[in-house]
Amino acid sequence: MAAAFTAPSAAGAAPPRPLLAMAGVEKRFDRGTLALSGLDLTVEAGAFVSLLGPSGCGKSMILRLMAGLAAPTGGTITWAGASRPRLSFVFQEPTLMPWASVLDNVLLPLKVARPAPAAALAKAREALAG
Amino acid sequence: MSGHPEPSLAAPEAAPRAAPAGNRAARTAVSAGVALVLLAAWEGIIRHFHVPPFVMPGPVAIARALVADWGLLSHALWVTLEITGLALATAVILGVLLSVIMSQSEWLESTLFPYMVILQVTPIIAIAPLIILWISNLKVGLLICAWLIAFFPIVANTTMGLKSADRGLEDLFKLYGASRWQTFRYMRMPGAVPYFLAGLRISGGLALIGAVAAEFVAGTGGQGSGLAFRILEAGYTMNIPRMFAALALISATGLVIHVVLTYVSHLCLRRWHESALKRER
Image (cartoon, rainbow over all chains, first blue to last red; front, side):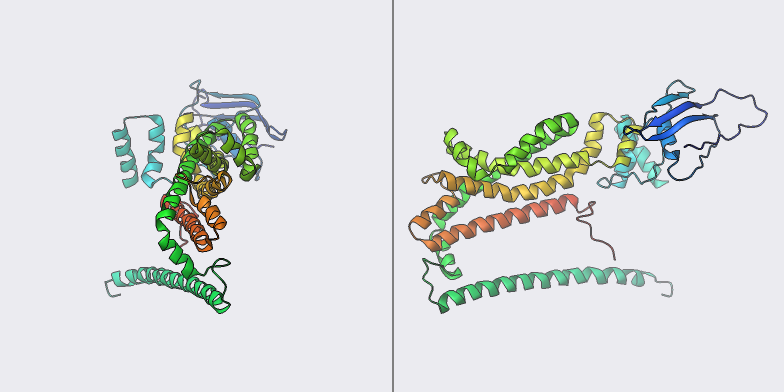
């Protein structure tokens, strides 16, 4: 069960190569439950896409597959740049580290990405001040 | 109000702060009062029924024995404390190390964990004689006995903590492309701290029990004699007030260990963990 709606690309413009193409994507859990099947979805660059569907139909799973947080059991997911670009993701549940300060929570992606620490700190402070 | 909102803002903050402080003082006073009443009742019953001190000493006789035998007892206390502290420290180091290893794969955990359970469920009293027999160095033998029983709560709790990472945070770290080490360092390790501390509090008391139980089994006097041996010795010589004084020292030690570890736990968790946070009302 899946519901996917692709927003129409800007009228008149020559259709560019889609940013993301999911073809015949299937997701079956280890215990055999079929979460998604036969999903075809293309997203053009700059498109605003909404996924609508009843609770439990697989909307979040589609996002998790796009982000690479889950692996499809069938079909293909292709990105225009051959590899997945850096994605931002807002989770359904708040994903904050309760033991860390606000600053450290903001710093986390920068720490993980290993830039110069001083630059990271300045960037996090700037984001918090804004 | 008239342009000065500060007083109205400050007032509701000041009131709830004063209340818990008064509450705490009252609670401490009640606890101390109950303890004093119990001790007085004990002493009163002993005196009223003329119970001889070799059957059951009263708190005054015990306190006298504690003062009179302080040299002997304080040395024994130090011996027991040393074994307990070393056992707990070893349990923490090896326990955390093993938890980290076991949390790396379910395969490793299912292989190693049964041995932890076997060690835990085997009564220390039953294997202490063997350990004391095998290990020629008595202190090391006692240490192994105390360590054996302090070890398991730390391993079991820390392993569970390392595996209980928030699923959302796991996704977040994956999305950021964090390495296995970064995920461990920034997420699994801090997330496991409350579990580790819960295990530590249990193990603190158990290390003392293990040290005392092993001393009872070893039953050796002389230089390396701890509080348990002093209890045995006092029993043989019918010096019951000294026996109770040694017992009181063991209980007091256990209490101090508990209070210290609870405070350490509070210091580590007060800023963020639900168990230490006061709910705003």
